[in-house]
Image (cartoon, rainbow, N blue to C red):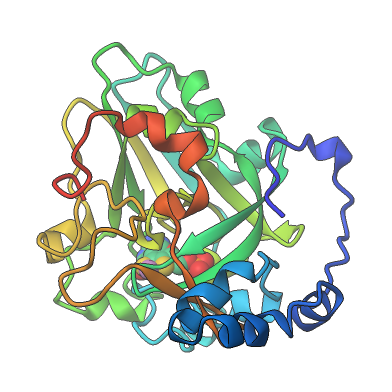
Amino acid sequence: MFRSNIPSSEITPKHVYLSRRDFMKAAGVVGAGALLAACAPNAATETAPSVLPDVPNTLEDITNYNNYYEFSTDKEAVAPLSKNFQTRPWDVEVSGLVNNPKTYAIEDLLKKFPQEERIYRLRCVEAWSMVIPWMGFSLAKLLTEVEPTSDAKFVRFEAVYRPEEMPGLKSPFYDWPYQEGLRLDEAMNDLTLLATGLYGNLLPNQSGAPLRLVVPWKYGFKSIKGIVKIALTDTQPKTLWSTASPNEYGFYSNVNPNVSHPRWSQSSERRIGDLARRPTLMFNGYEEQVAYLYDGMDLAKYY
Ligand SMILES: Nc1nc2c(c(=O)[nH]1)N[C@H]1C(S)=C(S)[C@@H](COP(=O)(O)O)O[C@H]1N2
Ligand SMILES: [Mo]
């Protein structure tokens, strides 16, 4: 199911996706779990999930089970609470250690960079996951245009802060605005996406409209929504989650089944819409594309 680098010209605007249940039926997956369970009763729950295919989640699931703490910590409340959030006009400031700082209106970004579809797994740190057909463009394209200087080592992202429209911002537990960061080489990897759409349409508010990051090999919280600022820096940026709870959330936050969260295991996950759990894959299954970024690093130390 994984596709990337598909030119927008090759994408049919209205996709027809098999429903999850139809796909499972067609693939004959229904019986596989039972079969494996019979062969290896003790390992049944750990073994059976690995045969489950990566089917895109429904738009219904993707847009009614969201983490967006500026609105609410209740995943099902984000959709209704964000319904009237205003995403136009919307400017994105790209600044810091770059030769060509620029503020882009969202329309300019949509016009300037061809939008391609990327079907990515999103693995939340809470041990659930989804498969999401995004639309967007590689962050690398935008960074190349603003030209990071030779001093630039990191990219800092800042989300919109609008307390009058975002009731969750009243929470005193977090250091608002939501911010995130990547090392420059992580940001330049082609997988790193600035997402503008979902299932061929513009992003719904609850998914981070009009612009959010998607870093598919990292825990979901790195994929910051409602981006208004992108800045190149020479020091590692602060992030909301590592500030809130540094021993639970580090700067890197690469999906790693071998490094537990202090309060729960990360070795398996529940795919929204599936009954059985499945094993969590190193780098969320994108090891081949991103492992080189961490050569020689102790990933238990740099979690
Ligand atoms: N601005 C902002 N971005 C955010 C969050 C948030 O609370 N605020 N939550 C993060 C978390 S924890 C996850 S798992 C993903 C969820 O993205 P989704 O709702 O599109 O699945 O968004 C991330 N981006
Ligand atoms: Mo998350």
